[in-house]
Each structure stands twice: as C-alpha cells, then as structure tokens.
Image (cartoon, rainbow over all chains, first blue to last red):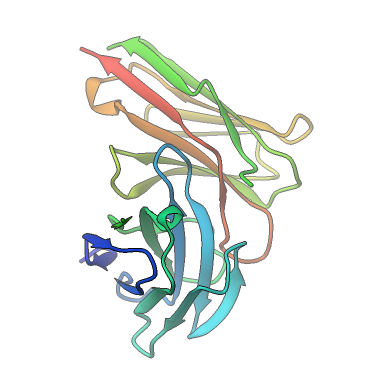
Length: 113
Length: 111
C-alpha cells in the first residue's frame, strides 16, 4: 500500500508569491494534518482536517489556509510568501480524528527567495 | 511555542552502546509519542505511551513516562549505525490529533 504522498517535493518561490502544496493520505485514512518544520527545529502544527472539516488550527497567520477534498486528499495554501515561510511542510494522515499515531509523508521543501 | 523539550540536543555514541534521550513537557497530556526523522525526510512513528502508562517496550526501544515530573525518556539499546537520526518527542493534550513537538535530539552512532 502507498504511504502518504506529497507534491511537489521541492519548490522555490519569491516573496509575495502564492504556493499550493498537495497531500494524498494513506487509503482509508480520513484525517489529514499539516505541519511546518523550520530547519533545526521540531515540526509545528498548522491544521487538521477530518471528514472535510477543519478540526484544529495552530498559531499561524491567515495567509495559511487548507482544505480537504471528498477523496480525503488535502491542499495547503500559503499566500503572500515571506522569507520565514521557508521550511519543510509535512502532511500526516491517520484513520480517525484522535487515534494518536500519525503517518507522515516525506514533505515538500519550500524555499522563499 | 514548542512544549516538549529534548535533552540532550545532540548525542554521539559508539555502535553497541545504549542511547538515552529525555523529554520534558508543560501541560497534562493524553499521550506522548516518539518519532524518528532521517536527515530532512518524513517522520516515522516509533512508540506511543498513554498518560496512564509508565513504561512501554518495542524491540530495542524502551519508553518511560513520569506524569508527576512531566517527563519521558527513550532508551535505544545496542545501538546501530542505522539508528543515526533525529528523535522527537511529541505530546497530545486534546481530543484531536494535534501534536506538539520538541526540538529533537540528534543521535549519531559511530560504527
């Protein structure tokens, strides 16, 4: 079975641009979470979606938004990119809303110049 | 802000030795989890310990949890070069799946 897949794996943007990151969860998993990991730090929670509804939001500005589609895949959108948005963006899926264990994808590495 | 704090930040040992990493957190928790990350790649779940558990084993891994001290430790026995990675503790303290990660311990196991 395929694990969590994320695209693109790497991308470079300039300040002020917009980016969309995509995630496909493990088949059967209905919950998708997004995390931002800045180099040298631990991941920070951005969003959780379950059954297409937002179930949690971290301390991130409104420039960050996400959605989940009927097939449980998800998109993370970031507007008006700043240099500080450069990070590894990780998507994680799980079967239920609060099972605890998360299955992570390999991440999308965003560089903002 | 990150709730979990790992100690040490970096650890270098020889193959065959044991590695111990510690994690402290600030609030009450539902569970505490340990994850491993190889050089900038995705995280891999290692073990989950619930707030009413004190010790858990999985292969060469042993995790303890002391809720009175708000701390946990991860012990890797008989380490191998392939164990070289960053290890993160993460706490879950609400009904959802939100995890609050620490800054991680970078473990290097020399052959």
